[in-house]
Image (cartoon, rainbow, N blue to C red; front, side, top):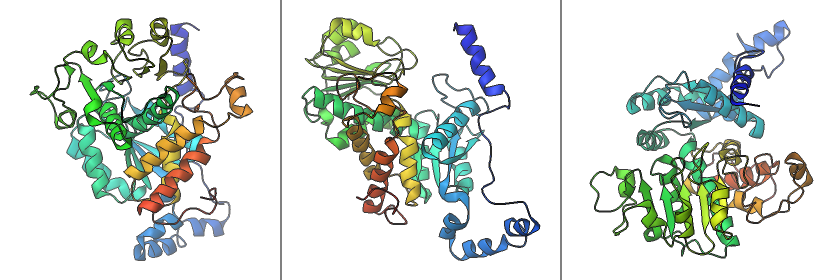
Length: 416
């Protein structure tokens, strides 16, 4: 299929036979006068009075406990930039489809005309009683940091910016496995990260909490190495400014064990990869064109483990491995947040799953009979049906143990 045909196929998919990708289903019988009186007046008054007395009863009598808002202001949509809220709607609907398909989580996609961060915050705060969780999406840095922090501190339901933490969780899970295969310790490796926005900052913070040494992390942005001599750094970048003579990405790559790119296409040369330490790990995650293509890296290093954000190469770093199952676990214990402990639990659950024997159903789905833990399989595939069995229970248990949960560990989950 050529480019024009692919474009038309995508447009037709969204337009026909009914516009959009979502609908609403009625979940209770609604065919008799008696059922009408239960669903609305006068029967609906009874749960209203119960919720007025005990707000947590909203989880018992309404859809709140399985309902997530996917919310954006359209300031950083995919790789397309500031398209605005209305043009972001196909992406938000797509996110909702993934939630429903993979974890049976219901979603309202909400596109807010609020480019100002405070306006956006106030809007989300006012509509939050409707939902059991908030998934922030496609919001530009640095506003995304302030927005998530404020909402997390002021709401009593999980608030999660997937572009930050979902990406970070998958990167960390994949990197733990890659380093284990390369026989390297996280606390000893030197890491270069290109891209000092939402995903890069969150990933490096999570790696530090897992044991990476702050002095071993070199952050780069469009102007080069983030170092203490610069006076143009926002507060988030300042946290990663190091005292170093390194100035360029090429300088930083020499002798590095790990490269993580969440930036733009073609920024890494073969010479840069060639200059890395033995048995390097390269996560080139810019989409659709990575910082360096796997075939280019493998041409100069036969000891490199590669990951990209693309589905047509091994080791795809895909957020769908995380966010549906993370929210499923959080919702099932009525968690008040998605805290650090829950994120760490998700990292280890995803990493552990990739080390398990791969079932035939996964091999058949990808038409690959030789899939096992190794250089070309450091992360589970998005269609692995075991993700819900690994990630959601781990997250739920962490929520209970950390005090974020309103309820206990679910009885229908695997025994702890």
